[in-house]
Length: 423
Image (cartoon, rainbow, N blue to C red; front, top):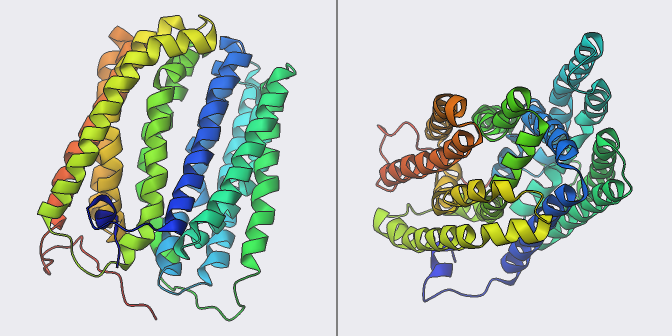
């Protein structure tokens, strides 16, 4: 069977569906990337900082929607349990009600307090939250069925529609509540029909994986840590330094983090193939192939740092020139972030739950120890150094974990769990 490793080697063969799906995911991320540039270009820095605060809150609340169900669905459907699609979607909807209650409670708190965040924004997020994440599980089903191109088409429609609505509202001068309402309503309006179209293909008697929700909860616990690492800093910067400081920080880390998200899409597309792979990859093969990705990451980091001042000046008309040096520093994270995502898929494909927990704990510990140590004295510079330090710590520990796993499995290796045969 052709694998990721042979695709990089001299014996690689062209896999059209995989290539189309990966290209579609890249286009989807490109849409978000372009939207990420145009929104701050259209909005004042103060409004953009407030907008980022609410979207960071929404992203942080994703942990209450059972996000681990995405990976669990890929694992189960790839082994023939097609009935998992409806089961995971229903479970995610139930879990999301907790997040909805918390967001509405936050709106009530700020209404009672009479200052700080806008309570209307929390109400909008609370009403739309149960539908925002629950039904995008269809993408996991299509991915597991090797229908990456179809999945990419649905995701591209979603990203294009949401970006178009946000940009139209921003261009018309509408405030943050309207931007949030438009984004949430459009996302739900695209995801729900796509889910039902895919759901109709699954036979009523399709088998369900009895372990899928158990694994989904494990992966959700694991995923809660990176959500904290990625978004809690925005909330803290908003509370302590204000909306304009948050806007400058988001602009500084935007390009490196979006680039790493693109590699994350490629990692997710490779998960079914890694899961089906029967043989255990020797360390010498992993080391040789990841050396290529390390070089790519280093080149990307240097190129990004070199062009960053010009990019910010041209695209934002001097509005964020003061964030150019911060953006150059953030670009160093690319050298570690790109290869780390591919190390991670090795662990996810083997259901190495304990190892993944340790990996994500390392990320949070590295980022927030640096955040607490550096931000009081260096403010935004300290926050960006914390992001770069987190990426470096993730890469180093991922290398260590994968090296330990790329050996003959034994009963002493508690993290090793070979996927069962297709039923």
